[in-house]
Length: 257
Length: 195
Image (cartoon, rainbow over all chains, first blue to last red):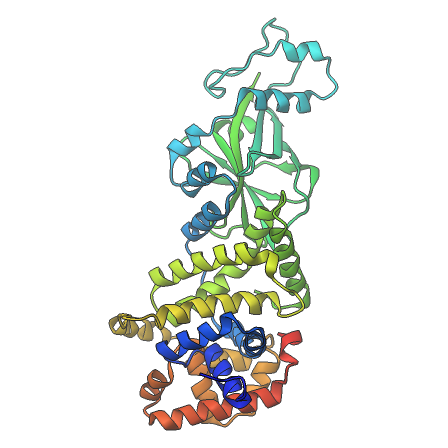
């Protein structure tokens, strides 16, 4: 059909295409025109700009979290990592499979002990199951406060969050490596026990170093955590007591003494 | 979801970061999802009337939004308008596909749920966020306004709309056509900037 010389018809069909009232056959024919006609696409875009703001009146319905898991899997750069991510909260097997590499632990320790003499670092033994068999300093001397440590990584394996708390302290030291804080959402920190049950530890408030008050001394709160994770939640945090938004970062929780 | 200029700008920024495919792009996209998915899921649910379909469409649409985030042109449409268009188009294509099975039985379930809450047209009229479109809808004749809003929110064809309103097809088509012309006169092309 020649439609280029019928501006009124074009206007009407564009409007009805956006409104949605064209039947199946007409809709498909119109969509086929759109492919090769930039002017027609512009007319449609104008109608979208006119009519689609009506959608603001539709009641919002939070989608089930599995949708984000699938979207995250589809857009992840590493397919293997994303497949695991899709089952993130559902699967304890996933938790177990995501053990922190020894080199990662060493790197984090280097950050935490900061200015301490390097020979002390070399004496640290890395133990694979840190909660049950905690890392020990081999010469018996104990240069550090007994403590809990966790590093949380994003899906690409980049360390985004480091957490540290002394065992007899309720002040959790947090270092967040994000480029910026979300403005319309909150980042909420969770501890997960061996059953994968999440417990909120509060919101990440800023980039860089900060402290968070724990609900109890670390020995009575962090001690039970096998994992820690950060999820993206509505402003002010989850209202349900469990994560409702996408999980951004996660990692193992380690005990040192 | 607040439809403020600040929120609008934040969504533009998030789309821009997502489109660059750099460290932080996925986090930006996650925030975009967090702050827009409830509204868009509501839009899809209302048109499709089945949560399994709405879930499938929403998932496809966010992957599509991610894939096209680099092509999003901030000057042409507001981010929420752009994303709403993607979702509505996908929903309408879904309903208009050949050999489509009519979800009549599910309609009844949904209608029962809907009757308990105010309809979107009522909400639209009360809304302070919809701006120009809500104001311009008020300039339409009642039957034109009803035809356009029911078609928009429920994703009905002319024929389905005629059946729902209990009017002849030609009459309903005329209401829609005249209503759309009046809306255009009222909104002009300014709707793009203010959307």
